[in-house]
Image 1 (cartoon, rainbow, N blue to C red):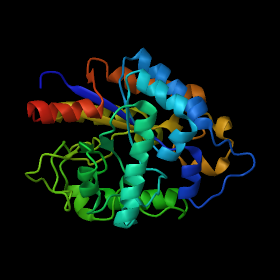
Image 2 (image 1 turned 90 degrees about the vertical axis):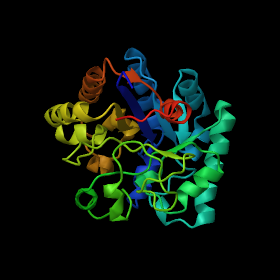
Image 3 (image 1 turned 120 degrees about the vertical axis):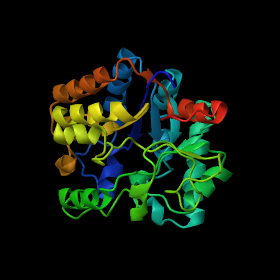
Image 4 (image 1 turned 180 degrees about the vertical axis):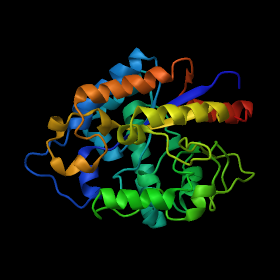
Length: 311
């Protein structure tokens, strides 16, 4: 592949999902619609400015409430992908039938809204199990993006547990073998999904992890550790990868007062001024200039149609 590719993917988790994951109920003052009302319009404006075509992982129950926003994202050339029906934080613990329902019902909703086939999936909390890929295969999906290939998963989970004051269980998958999965796209074994296999129906496209350091390279890290670590991480990544998958959460572009719930201050950067948040977005988007922006659907098509292997 001659030109390096950047994919921006966004998990659209509405405010009540963050509260539910921490066993909170909304208060009478919590503004539950702020992600769709404020954050996503800002995100779309910034992506238009930088000519980014992104992949939005969308929760089905939220799409039902905000179909016009989903239609706008789709109309603007962005990919709409599956983030389950109800965003169960510990998705990997669901039984087969419940997991299948969460995935397939979400697809029905998204496809009804957009009129397009949905072929991509990401699990809440990066939590899948040995049934997930088989369900995706039977459902006609072409790629998954739920494997978090970092050997630091135990440390990251501990950090998350402490930051959230014990109100959240582990994320990123429970099997420590996930940390040894390929850091580049691969065709996984359907049950032992951290392993490569000969099947070529479901492609695994993991989020970018910094080589050797095993640090996540995503919006949360930029908000938590700032521009210096981002710059070092990107310098290393540029030496080894022709594809960068930079993962974001839509909550990163909502103002604190637009949510009005101090309990979510455990989220990195949640209390940053809106000006600072937009500055950070401009910073990383500017750093990706010169890369070719593609959706994950387009990335998967490169593999399937041209049998290109990204180095």
